[in-house]
Image (cartoon, rainbow, N blue to C red; front, top):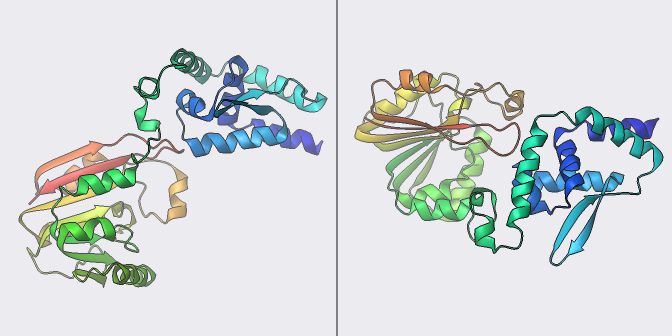
Length: 303
């Protein structure tokens, strides 16, 4: 009875069900499953490991790759459990899309890597083509001048921002974050970076004293975002730039574990709160691949 409960809990996961259904038609590699299910490598690998441990699938070496396929020698209880769950899940509307993508993946087999990833390069790993390296490369064009980073946390972005700023003022309300940030800054040797324990609603700077103000996924932690954005406008010089990266309004309870004070914001809210600024632009970025698929808003404006 205990094994039955474990088997049912394992098969209750939507992603594992999709994997089992798609593998019934053709053995696939982790990379191919990424294309079919449109999920990241770590997520796919984790689910495959659980299915392999319980004995529902196995993997077979094929050249430098390993293809996963269902086991044909399932024991009685496990075989019966999967047969029952399989029958109940056959009408899942997502399976048709999975089968279509699997067909396209099979059609691409045998082509070279460049042809194979056309249309899905955003999900593929290529040596050196990481978000970290891309950020470093693109930021060489950025000039922040006298920059204020509101909600700088422990300074994880100092290495990126400091070389592009004549001065960098890092703001955070948490003493532990400030201490960690100062330690990181000292280790990097950036003497033009200063730390301030302060709230976003009360920035410790004079009017028109900053060339750029950044909120990099920090606005959702601010008690009064309207007042924080007004403070940013107050300290910016004429022609100064505001950049806000924040979450789109959502209803994901997972955000609570990160201490967010707000479940994101709508474009309309941000537009209303920044009404006095110029060249206001707001873009909605693609949803994250990792569940629950948070989305980010990118706001830029000038004073």
